[in-house]
Image (cartoon, one colour):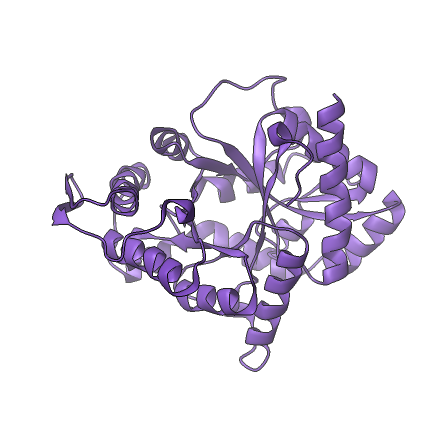
Length: 342
């Protein structure tokens, strides 16, 4: 793991590519390769998406577990798809069968069309209230050897027992979207990690208010020894694409996610082209997060500022090669070392 000292430990996840864009014949091999690259780089785990267009995240997680020795799937969980008992049962079943820990990325929203097709008309902030109950039941089942009873507005269970019990050392980390106030409050109540799609680090106050639970960011990184080389790689990988821009605009219309709107608004503020913080991949619907681009030292400095602000969990965009993970590792090691010295 990218660990320089106990108080500067980074928990790093990569991301599976969207299976909706994959080809049937190559999808499995691509996922296996990315999982192995991530594990070899020392990552904690890998984010597995969920929405109406993706493959089932539990089946994808099974593939990841079979292809690696210790990598932990970070499974996106949307309440509309599954009862909380079924989620807890999946977690303990993976632990029993594989001795493997899963992490849970709790998702309140999604594309409006997806939710409408499933007849989920719950308003945005109420979805977080529902998700809070949902996650509370999951945590209670996973943590308790005794039957669990819970009476809430959205969910109720009575003397529900999880079998087989989950070993304490395999309890999952819980991650929440931290882009909206409702999401941050829910994460705080659960002691979960609130994950944001960050702004440039310079736009944050020097110190942030204390909060329960840890904080994380989702970013992409393209770094090389020199700025010019990094930007050359970045522009070749993510060229301007009018079709992608139109797709992005359409996605904005059918998404009610706070992070999507915030990034889109930030993309219209005229950030300097050579600034490490780069939104072109997001604006062209080629990535779902901002990118940091530049020399190792320049990007490490930006990552280091996020660490100084209290962010310890980093979810990286899907890697394109084993070598690319090596470049990212250089940045993360330098960022952590910088913060330790400071």
